[in-house]
Length: 487
View 1 (spheres, rainbow, N blue to C red):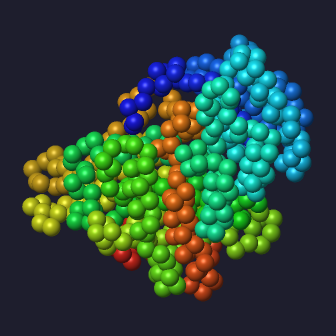
View 2 (cartoon, rainbow, N blue to C red):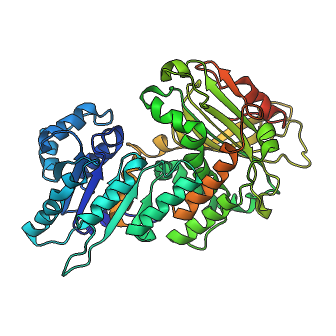
View 3 (spheres, rainbow, N blue to C red):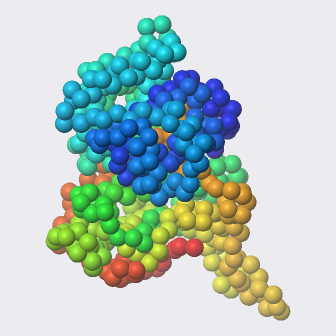
């Protein structure tokens, strides 16, 4: 997407120490460590690289790696040779955020690694913990001299914050204020792993590298847009966390609104970080906020039948959400954006579909509007539905796909999103990360929903596990003479 040669890029990486706080959690075992181990196997890490993994438990370097390998679903196999090589990078550090003094030895550990070779390492910090610990970690880094520069060399210091970045606008502003107390905006990497997915990145390529799409990308030619993030599983082990967020804050605030911004943004003059972000922020700030009437007419909440059983207590948290949003810009005036997400549904799928208007006048009977679909996961692909003639003596029309499948076109595995984003973090490329005003604009829109809905204007509709969600969600879109679309 950004004219990036990975192998050429990594050969120029400066010496780097990456520290992960929360290294024994599910995020680290399921995504971060598998990605870094694979990057090591593929020789994508800096030549001089150290990985400091911070957790509360008692581990040696070897026992920590064994713990990750055993716990991880993503590490299918690792040879003894690869394991031995990775241990050269790895340092496990036991620290307790509730006892900041336990981090005092970390400064010596990091500086000792530099002193061994007289090398000034870049210091990168990944906050892979609950946001409640972000302030403690930032204070620890500052108080124990972990943010200081080298005496003789320039040192890059960066921090990556995992989602959720706040739980509403006020908390997001407080977190931004906290981070900006210790870091400048160009040092802060707020992650949304959906932006690292290949087909999400492909949105901009398809739009801006193909002349046939961008001239039609507006209210004159597009009837509506749908974005669906559907999951087959329930909350499982995430129940306690999920009950505090629900579908609105767990998926819509970040993943869905980021994809919406990429779909709707204007073409940037170039692919520099700030121009891309400026255009995304313009969209997020132009989302029409919800009022009680809009909640009642343009939003559906649901909860799967066994949610309270899975959670172990009564709850009014939504596990399904469907809504109709509008963007108050001339380009998109009157175009509805239908957004939905839910758990315990009939299938796991993430798709974006652009529904073009039907022809004003069609010479043939049965002309349908064209649909451009981006399948984000699974089976990453792009589909364009067009009208064709069926074989025979009559001009009968048939809607068929022009399709592009990543797996068919490119043999081998598609790079995981976290791997791409970790690589950008190492390099210092912020284009796939989120700026502070993006976060705040998204939360402002979400707050207009969460602070307005109640049991009367937005009742919680039960639905069976393995279905498409509450039946009222189907009626919700059918009243606009449309249907939910998935390939």
